[in-house]
Image (cartoon, rainbow, N blue to C red):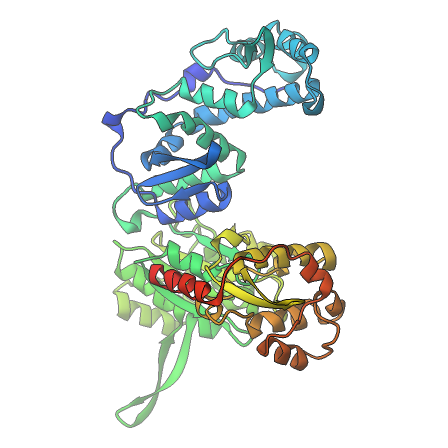
Length: 520
């Protein structure tokens, strides 16, 4: 389908990156976490700086303001990215990476510079001309040509390189690392909805008041042990929180609040006992200058929609983070308690803009309740991926032929998950998270019982235990005992694929664990 493009010069923001206007900007924690998750291990984000690995194991360091500038350049960058993806498609259709020849590069240049065979891609002639000028280098105010001449031969530049030059042409570059600003924005564009997330969060975090962050419902999900609760702790650090855990017997009255017996000077009476939701709601009302977080651990261990009850409707939010609708108080007792607690005489209520609800869930655990579509679509979903590089530092001791061998936990974890996928066809959401074993457990230099019982009983309950484990052990009790006495518990096939052991000793691993604890 033909695409309508934009005149990039017309939408380019009137702002440049210069030392004079690089005002202080602290990257919000929620943005730091999202950027590291989406952009991968090459990027590291701190409050006022971030870095990217570049060629030759070198690192480019950027000021935090570049994240804010990425937001400012969003309309321009997204339009340029649309041009780039079409250029990439045309380029790939003509140039096959495994067989790049002068002839097909010449053909690509001919098509782009002379507007040949481009009409099917565009809505009008103006867009064809803009595209042609952009990539042939005829419009020098936007980007250099997509082609270079080297040793008398025409060379097609990479799409990332062309995009970066298009960004850099629109800004001044106050330091040597600014040349990678274009790469940073390209990576953001490549990461799906990341750009929208950054723009949204910076807009609502720009005020110095914590309450300026808009309320939202975020569901953190992923494999067991990926650090979902840890992620929430990082995102709500130094903020007001109310925390609860759902379980199979959790009811609406537990979550919202209910009448409970009380002793009034020896006389039995009944009064409203607030649940975590009522407490968080009142706290948000009483502290309009603060942002309040209601945290629900293990959301799907209870029938969540039933536990929320009428509050379900309040999860729809307006652009400022408050509820789109209001509802009557579920009971007169709740209304009277809320009035006494906050002084608010309202007949109806909704979620205020300074109240967010964060929840965690493991979709693959046994004995959990499914979340229906109507309930789940009212939450933003934050997938927490398995990232071995974020695993705690630690060494584990594995018995194999020839004696004990030491492995770095992160390396062993990566191999174990790879083996579970390839040899046992285990689904991604049932794999082992990088924080499945804690720093304390790793000090013992052996696999914890909770990991072994999860592998034995949850993942391999019905089949193929002997593919992963030594077939000599037919019960979990015998496997556990063998692990305690450091005997060979894994199958020969698993150990053969494990790879080289770390060249370390027990004392070395003790030193590494001590370092990890001191830095935590």
